[in-house]
Length: 363
Image (cartoon, rainbow, N blue to C red; front, side):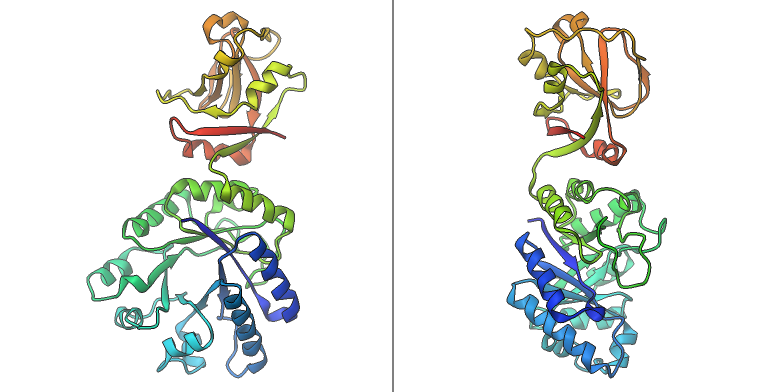
């Protein structure tokens, strides 16, 4: 079951502010928190106590906390000999290995008897998982999460993201990835260029990012990476998580007719006999068969990827059919160009499957 969570970076804020923020996210169904312990300095008891109080409060909210650690953190804080015990004492549900330990050390950690999850970095390569598969690691205690990337143009390509996500998913490992809020600016480092896992997602509305993550079918946990998302954006994220239907934002002609608008906002289904040129929604032509759709002779008939096309009165039995162009081509005078899918929704076209329902939302 797909769940969602968020990230918190509490060192610069009062405890009350952080717990209030956690309450807001809980209201919208958050079940998991990502924290980074990499910034904690040995001997900073005040910050450690703050983190521990936050983790305790998260546990009271039935949220599990997975914390980023590194070999340096383990050594500086003398957690080497009792890492599992120290992590459970801190209230953590899991440890994310920002930098991988040796295979032998990871195997030993996975064999813990208290259910502490060991989270692998799933953005890099497959060797570690293959090595663990060849060992006696306890895979019940192994989960995985992609990185996020503060620096623009450094996040994962869509192809690499899908390859790695498929690999971990096929191995039966619980997966997670990050989406980036457009209203939140705080992360673990002083860079505010978004915090996505996938570079193509960096500047997209969060609802579109969520839809794209869901469409892969390989991500079990979607995590908001940056801190203090607005409630309005959080609502959009929540609705996208719950929706079973993909929604494309579209712009339309200023002089759209009532019947054209009704067809655009119809509850569409992608017809199953696939074309290289268009996605077809054919039910509207049976619903609106008695209504006139006059030709638009004074417009260009050149279409591009994402153009919305409605067959007009000249197309006889096809009148009222809606199509979405998948490539550049020229339509006849028997069809009207009525709108365009917005750039931030175009990449979702690749995730639409034959016989799948979808909606077009006019903005």
